[in-house]
Length: 206
Ligand code: HEC
Ligand code: HEC
Image: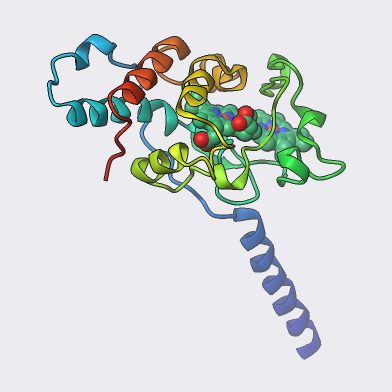
């Protein structure tokens, strides 16, 4: 009897430990913006710093969208869906963000979105490096990090503008397939706002 109780207790403890591993750190998905204001909306803000900050708040609607955040996690594991649930199955960064051996990202994520199974795809599908983690950070902290060459892959401001406006993996966020909500506006509109932010002094909030 006592032995049976001990087994039950051990199993319960295992279940709790298992749940702890599976649950990971839940991140509350920020509210999703559905559109971007045009650049002309910001022309009336005469103060350069105020205009720059307003522009960054606008591009923040894209940067803090689940489409970007899901792939810029703080830990080992991407998140998925609009609700930003921990990635199922469990996958980890592995070498260069491409997943562990046997669970490489490209095992499931192919060149294009695979609609029958709702699996997103892109030729460059892999996890953003840890120093580029955005989840759980304020927009001001993300802003400072994006400008920091130690943490942005050594990108100059011009290269950042180009990445935002032209990068094909960034662009996936506007045609994500499945039931995913696309990032607001268009990549071109986002790129235009981001460039205007850079040109207005690239001020960070906070
Ligand atoms: C499928 C995963 C994935 C998605 C989705 C994704 N990224 Fe990334 N991101 C990466 C990877 C990998 C890198 C590092 C390689 C590189 O610089 O191209 C990166 C790097 C970056 C960088 C340069 C480094 C930095 O953090 O300053 C920026 C800027 C960026 N991403 C913006 C975005 C934006 C904006 C979105 C959403 C519109 C987005 N990313 C969506 C994987 C992703
Ligand atoms: C065993 C298959 C499998 C592997 C391996 C895998 N994924 Fe996924 N991934 C999926 C499926 C299926 C979905 C779609 C789930 C959904 O939307 O309900 C998904 C969704 C995602 C999303 C969410 C996109 C969004 O915004 O909703 C991200 C980000 C992602 N995967 C990144 C990765 C990365 C990075 C790797 C490698 C480290 C990886 N995945 C490895 C199957 C896999």
